[in-house]
Amino acid sequence: MGRFSQTMFVIVSFTLASSCKELQQGSKKSAPIFQAPPAAATSGNQERAPTDPANAVKTSEPALAKLAGYPDTKSPNSQYDISVTGVAEYKWKMVDALTECQQSSGYSNYAPANTPIKLDLASRKDSPAIVALCVIGKNAAGDEQDYATMASWVWTPELPSMSNTIDMIEGNNEIKITPQAPTGNWLVVRSREPLSALPEDGKEYAANQPLGNGTVMVAGPMAEFIDKSVKNEESWNYTFIAYNSSRRFSIPVTRSMTLSKQQLLWVQNNLVQAGQVALEARAANKRYICRARHTDPATGQTRGLQPGSMFTANNDLKAGNCFYEYGGVVYRSINYELLMANKGNPVDLIRWARGAANATATTIPNGSIIAGTDDTGATQGPALFICLTVNAQISGKAGTHLPNGCRSYVGNNNGTPSVSVNFDVLALK
Image (cartoon, rainbow, N blue to C red; front, side, top):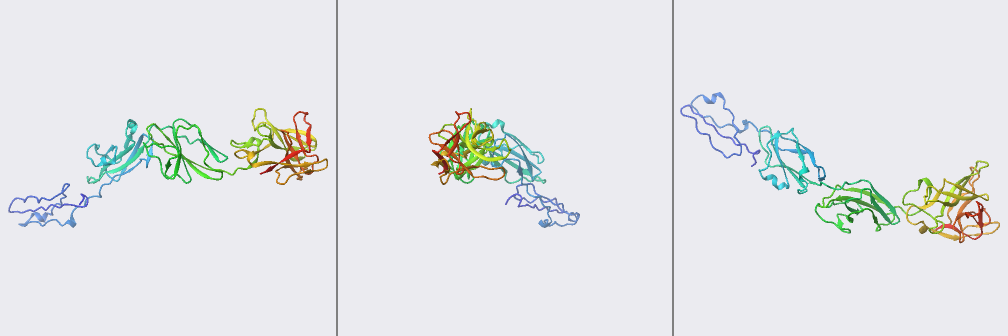
């Protein structure tokens, strides 16, 4: 039986005719508890009966130290204030393994419970990563707990700083990952669900190795990583963990991303985002398909969105000029929208379909992309389409209500539009 569950009683006998009898010996772990006999027991020529255990003085509640202020799993911090409650005083020691708690050596002197344990691990930088703390408390009656209260965690000092700033840009069936603090070694793990396991300190990991429900994508230095094994409309979790040469791993940072469907968008020039790709009229000719809202300079009335072609001197998509035709005159605007793919190459989404025209009418192929309307003030007019003259480099506009086919700015005739009955119209694949 434990020392708290067993109380030993020692019988004391008295006699007037002779000297006191010796105390009856019993097996015990701590000092016996005595109850003083009443005065009547010392008078008369009789021996007092043993004390009834029901009337014995009770011990206080068993001692059990409770600890707070230490990390649950792992921490890079070096200093801790750990509080001790549930006891009157305690002694403690810090060891490398919890099995050492049962050894009596190494404990401190007893201290009041209102005094926290102050740990400074800075001197343990070359010590094992496991921190183990052993505490033995006493209650107010001085009874010591049978077994030490123990706490342990993984200490991860000297790690590269773990930055939460990690750029993730989705592409077409790919994700580009760029940390803004690229120094040191990285473990990047990809998983469908939140990662179910963390790396073990001291263990070596390699790319394509499973870890819990995930797969290691990067193990080592990383300035940039492009994951090309994902598909549009899939959802993934990426867990980022830094580690040092001793393979101590930091607290993880997890980012999630769902890859969107590739599609075409009209994007205002000042809102163009990284990853969006503008559609060029011809491959790599830097003449981008645009549209701008035209206002009649004479009446101030809006004439709708007019498709055209955008030029930029320094390839800055936000700072170009959109040239378009209206009423036989070429205009330009610095406020425009670009036809862009949200990711990937927009050419993957479009085709050029052959149109037809004569001096009285224009035929637009089925499936062509409506790019604007020929409005009159608040009244919406007929649809406008993006056209490209055969063998030309600059896109323009066409509509069934406009004769002679495609109208575009060719850039070499002082703003006079070019009109051609031989043209293609932009359509979706």
